[in-house]
Image (cartoon, rainbow, N blue to C red):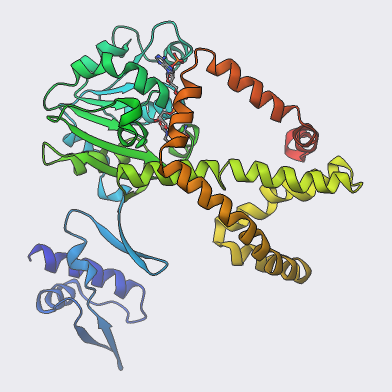
Length: 415
Ligand SMILES: NC(=O)c1ccc[n+]([C@@H]2O[C@H](COP(=O)([O-])OP(=O)(O)OC[C@H]3O[C@@H](n4cnc5c(N)ncnc54)[C@H](OP(=O)(O)O)[C@@H]3O)[C@@H](O)[C@H]2O)c1
């Protein structure tokens, strides 16, 4: 049986198991698969009932490099899933590689630990004596064996995962570049350094592969989902393909560092959507919205516990998980008709008010001004202290102090 017939047989077996046709012998399935063209209708008779099924077209294509085409709300996109790169396959693919993970923030720690647990040959590169070095040693990386100063790790690595902070990627590039010799692979989890190269001066040598896997979540979640046997969604991209295998490397590494499925992007599209998302709904807009509603409730005499419950606690503990489970209409459907009526009427003015802000945000991200601002602020030697001042201001504002008390009352936190 050729590959296409074998795939068709496998799909037919799947379809038949979901019908009420009953048992069809393995030989009949193979015969059908050999004779049938994808897309053709075939008839099966079992007892007195005649069934008609369509031979799946995707059965043929699913065998080609594991790529799947799925319909995302009417637009067709291609994805890879974890099952496309089983552990034995990527262990074999990377058997001669040393994966050097540079940086041990949320992404560096999550990705290096997952790849190590998945059986790849991983080393970590950090500045000696830094906060990350101490954490890496606590996580079992051994100085001189699997933990090295940054340039030494880049020298040893055949695949270098640059997971320093975006500002440090700029600062350390002149030290790293000479060790990125012909045939190596340079990997990022963000398009930032490459796309904003006029500001970062990160311009890779043209004889190495340059790829990206960008997990869609914090590195902490990359690790926690992996430990739960789940996987984070990630995008992947190829910027330079010298070996002809850059895409395979990106997808295989994506799976090895803990992705559940991967969708294709470019460095440019990733960085713009990512910067917009975190400044917008994921982080910036959400604090702005929470705060505005809380302030209005407080100004009109509502207590902090009432204002916090109606603004944040109900959102994060009850309603947002429903959106994650089954979509916005499902969350609406799970609420009272009074709540539904209000939400359906009021999302429109909020949408109208927010859209120009998102448009301005997109412009500032796309023209590089946001990137320049990030590099300037995060290159300051005091950036951690300055950041802490701003985080403290939020932590100590009334809304989040009220939140601390509300969270302490959750029954599961009391036991
Ligand atoms: N965090 C996320 O949610 C997320 C999600 C997707 C993609 N990404 C991308 O993944 C990459 C890593 O992000 P991250 O959040 O994991 O890391 P991060 O917290 O931004 O960076 C931390 C690492 O950079 C090192 N570092 C900072 N300044 C340094 C310097 N001057 N010299 C040497 N090392 C320095 C730190 O070492 P020390 O401890 O020694 O200071 C630490 O190991 C970035 O490109 C980011 O955009 C992040």
